[in-house]
Length: 320
Length: 320
Image (tube, rainbow over all chains, first blue to last red; front, side, top):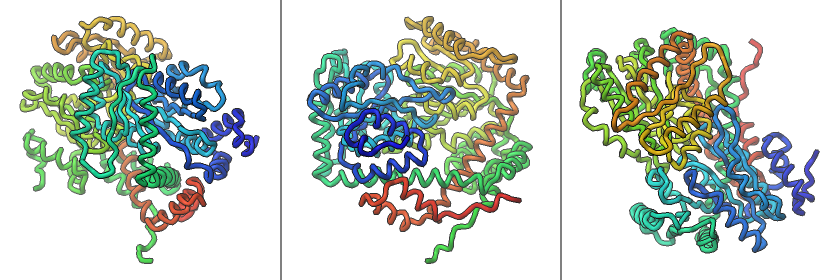
């Protein structure tokens, strides 16, 4: 069934659910829909929320979304779950706590699976953000689970990246060490009532100072403490999130971010199309012959790859 | 300076260090060296050790390697550290504890950086395993840090995959949930003196029973408890690791593993060569023109990608 743009743009929840399902199929109809919506995209703030498991990201997001809902924001959350490399199943445990808000008008919450074993955000995530942004959701939160794997990608997808950590986590220091601090715009130490929260905040501040080169117009990464359960610090967090959006708009960084996001999407689609062409040049037969030589130890993997690559078309002459 | 195969094969430590450095450069000389060593590879047991940060993997490996050294094994460890996506620096903290063993004859320990932000094992890791295996190291341990990201790849690289976890970790349950149990051959609950270790072992056993389909000749994944500091359980762990190697040899799985490992290496090299050709067909100019249209919202990313892909060469006729 075709999705009515009119229904979508007037906020029909069933039309939206169908649109996101369409995007999940990544088929020709999804491409048509995305082409139609593209001219309306580019307005809302896209916010990446990342941090290790157990830091209370989901609870904090619930508190944040609940407030934004009350304040009449039209808010969306895409939660990207680690996928079992074997079963392909997504973990929905944390999502259940969102129930209640999910049925509210102007709040859209959806879990999406990651693409593969490497923790990359899926194509679906990127396209679903476009749909939600085009339909006036602002902000669009993208929550990723993990510590150190897909933070680089979330930074390209989002205008503002928030790292949520909690004191006393086994891998807390690991998170800080793994370079995530360097790519986030706001640091939150959640579960502020726990022992060690002030120390963790101090550590984060010190590490940020170590890494920061003094640049004019640079955003000073704030380190906040929150308690998602009591709601402490949640309003200040939202205020800082919006302040960062103002900052990137005022300094012109917003345009660079939007261009980088679109370029990343185009590049990935081109790379995927290119990769799909490969088996048409290196046929299964050619590959099997080369692998057989490798298994008999007549040929090493590098030499086998080189001989297969000689089957490829030559690029056009570089003169033009 | 060319690396002498004779020196390498007689166990000259400096020649080995130069060989691994050569492989790290991934240049033509590295390819020559790998081609020369390939006929000697395929003898030793490759063991993947994975698990969340803080589970005590490094300490356990130290205890294991220390025993294997005493028992006159020629043993190697490649430690794959998460790399900061921004600074590119590897974390060497855990490695320091290995000092002492590193200088022992017949023990080779080296840290390698991961390739990128996604936690994939680097090409260097795969090739360094080949070098060490060809030079008679048995076992070759590959230690990866992380929880749920690169376990699928380590399973292809290794004959035997060991998951190390510890009770009371914030993300312990997360690790179990994330499907890692399904892809490991041996589960170790380290820090067995901590409260909750027996419960964690019980949980792991139950989850393994849930996932296990009864198959003839199937390996029964053992759940062991260890204490790396006192050495408790370390001998049994080694015994189970060797029992698994005997199992894959006796059931013929070993050959399938070795073929899959070589195929993965060839496929990745071919894909990399293919990806490198792309900018020769889609020139920076063509790409920039398409992106400009996307930024002006005249073209959406999918349509832009489609128009760029039309610049690509057509595959040869499928009839042959």
